[in-house]
Amino acid sequence: MLKLNLGCGEDIREGYDNIDIRELPGCIRANVCDLPYGENSVDEILASDVYEHISHRKALDLLKHWYSILKPGGVLVLRAPCLDTILMYLATAKNEEQIEEGIRMIFGGQEYEENSHKNICQTKIITRQLEEIGFVNVTHSFNAQNIILTGSKNDTV
Image 1 (cartoon, rainbow, N blue to C red):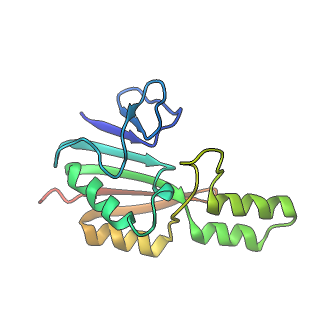
Image 2: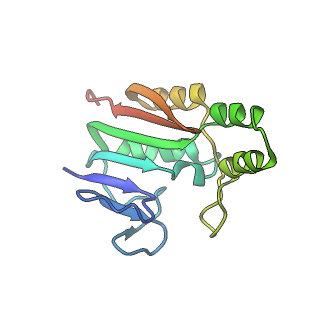
C-alpha cells in the first residue's frame, strides 16, 4: 500500500513516503505540485498543512495532479486553514493577540520561505472543486480554524 504524507516537515509517519520541499531528515525531497509517482499508483494522500502554501492560481491543477496519481478508490485527506472559521475567529477576537493570531492563520508563520500562505480553503468552493475533479464521498470537518476534507477517487475511472 503506497501512502504519501505531503509537506510533512518534521511529522514523519511510519508506513508513508514522507515528502517535503525542504531537505529534512527522513523525507523525500519533492515538490507536491510535481510528484514522482505514476497515474493510478497511490492509495492515500495525506496533505496536512501544505495546500495553503500553493498559489491559489495553481490550486485546481494541484488537486487534479493529486487525483491523477491516486488509484481508483484511493483517498485524499486534506487539512488546511478555512476562511469561514478564521473569519469567525477574527470577528470574535477579544484582544490584539488574537487578531495577530488570526492574521498568522491567513498568511502563515513566514519563519522560512516556504512557510507563507498563498491560498486558503472556503468550504463550499473546495468541496465543489473536489467533486468536479471526480472525487466522491467528499466530507469535511473542522479542527480549530482548519478544515479537514476527505474524498475518494471515483473507483469507476
